[in-house]
Length: 139
Image (tube, rainbow, N blue to C red):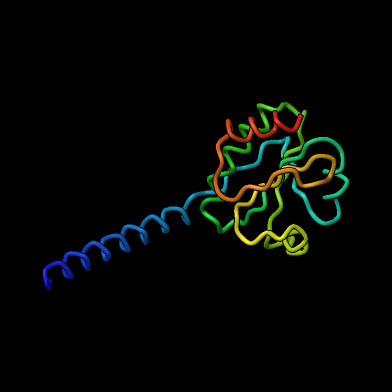
């Protein structure tokens, strides 16, 4: 019994060490520059930019590792949709009102809007192919 507790303790400590170093690596990831077609959305322009057609909105923060991982995916998505869909990003640190309005509790959160109304909501990292499939369903 005592040996089993020691083994479990070593496994838990090893997992925590691995988690710590993984988290540090995510924090060090650079923020990728946005594609020229990705719009920075704020309270002042959000409704105007998302009221017509399909819009994909990424709620993110610069300190969030998974959010940084979504940057290149959104850039690829912007290339793939070639201006047919609005792609926007909302920095939740700067736009807390928008985050509250859409009840964003975790980041990254992606909203897909059709004519200003939320059609889909996703939390966490999503692939370009997954997002393209969801966009196709809305078109």
